[in-house]
Image 1 (cartoon, helix red, strand yellow):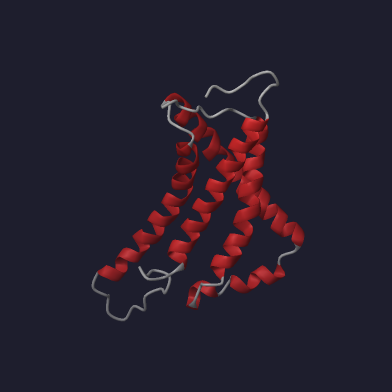
Image 2: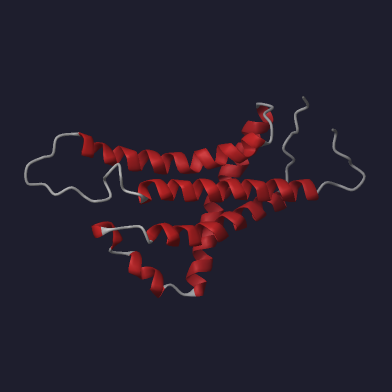
Length: 164
């Protein structure tokens, strides 16, 4: 079995950032529709966003994603891993901490309740947005990695043929 190395592309980084930004804004809006109780008090603010705000959010999300791809490129390249790891690592690296923090705050549900304290609805193991947000981030990062790979493969210098 031959290893297919990940090609480098500056344009691929830009494309990956644009893909992540373009996907995360609607995915975050979608996951916000599942919020309930005190956790949903800011969901109505999506209606006050202008198209320029949404583009700005997409750019910020894309800029935050680019370091994940650059780091993953070097990890995959140095460890001589296959391209599939270039898709998996950014998704885990970006979504893992978000899932971990959500599960950490949900641990209070497993402990005996303190008398007179009303638990926060979002601090529950069964609260759907605690899982939808990391899934949305993982999906966007994976598709961004695919965009990077497609762009990097398409930007090879002419006359260079890939090894089988």
